[in-house]
Length: 211
Image 1: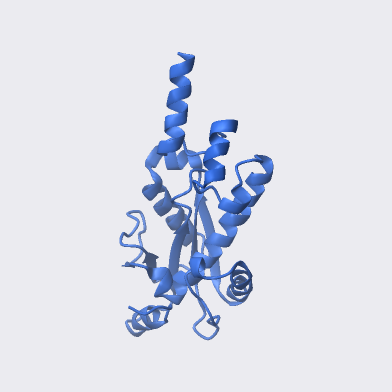
Image 2: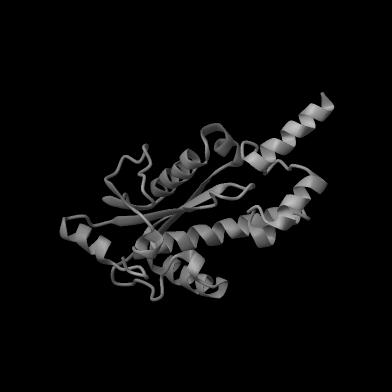
């Protein structure tokens, strides 16, 4: 396994006759608050930005530069699944729902989809391949991971301004010490995922006390 993304997955599919190959990735499965986001990206083989990698391995400045390069030449779609959808169908299915929505939003219908992870969304009615650690192995998936992370971080920053104290502009809704303390001090917001254990426990205790 390489330590950086390559174009070999896409090249192999091109050799089999696929023209438009989309990389798909999600971000935000672990946070206690906010939507889960996914992006789908079809790169132009003649204009693959240099330095693509798993978004978590890149600085914010590098991600922003790569986003600009991606948006200039690629077919890009971003989608999400809401906190309520996460509660209704669970976080895995919600992340898959966001992926399917992202693929459906592309200008071009892909011939094949490279999906980050070990599962293919069951409602993705397009030939697809699951690629474990795909954001570190496929340039298309790496591009999608960058797009999805930047969009979600912006949304969480905005929500952080609307609900100050939880530190979402810095922790993106993940269960940091500040976030967990704010939950105890300030309570649960409409943007918290009520089926996630720390949130569920707080709501359960509040219900017991009020009952």
